[in-house]
Amino acid sequence: MKKIWNFASYNLLSLFSPPVGLEYLHCDMKRGFAKARKKEPEVAALLDKDNTAQTIGLLAQKAVYEIHQDSSIFSQKDALSRIVNILQLSKESDLVRERVIQIIENYLENPIILGKKIIKLSRGDEGFPEPILIQQGNYLFNLYAAIDCIFLEENNTLHILDFKTGKSDFDRRQAYIYLLAASYIYPENKAVASFYNLETCKQSKPITATPETLESFQITMSRIAKQHQKDLRRYRQKTDDFRDIFPQNSGISCRFCPFDSICKFAIEGAI
Image: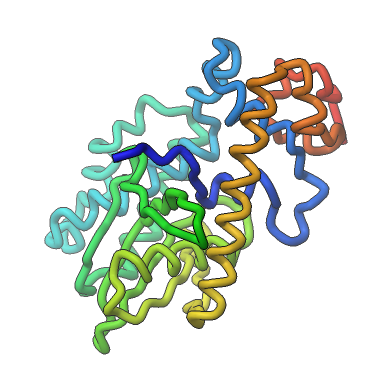
């Protein structure tokens, strides 16, 4: 079977187009580094290094996973210390350790999926999920959707739950990607998606999508997959055109870019 290289994911979508209100932080050159130049030693080293936010997010997901491996943990006085030891938080920085401990305490007090019929609960470090092959017209692409948790509501509706950390707002587009994926993986089930922030304990309302909305979003993801492959081919044919293919947006976005140390367009101390 011919391998399909074209792909789309929430990560790729966010590299193309940031959430509403964060346009000023967008820089397409970041997509160029992350996707077109990812095998270069300097770029690969930066991609392989988790930042503080990523580390906290991964440990938070692992914490939820470990908590639900033994339902009796909720009645144990040493539940917190047990999870802290499993996660080996003593090896982390003070900031990471303090925030993750607070996340564990929050969740032990409010375990929102306790008693639910869990279909899937990710540990967070499984790697890329199995792709979903989608055909849009005569174009084929793989959709990647890394889902944190799926449980079954009492009315047999699938509930896709995505865990968040930090202060970022929920991005409705991510929910649509999950719902699009669910329409292929579980075609017989109705589905909703929601977000839950493990630090603020804030939960979104359930998000649904009509077949028309999913079709429209599928077209969007197909367009992004196609444009991304076109950009990659252009870069491989002429690497000197990197800046033209992936234009920079130097400024405040440089403060939050993992590639600022190797990007010649980065503005030091940008505010």
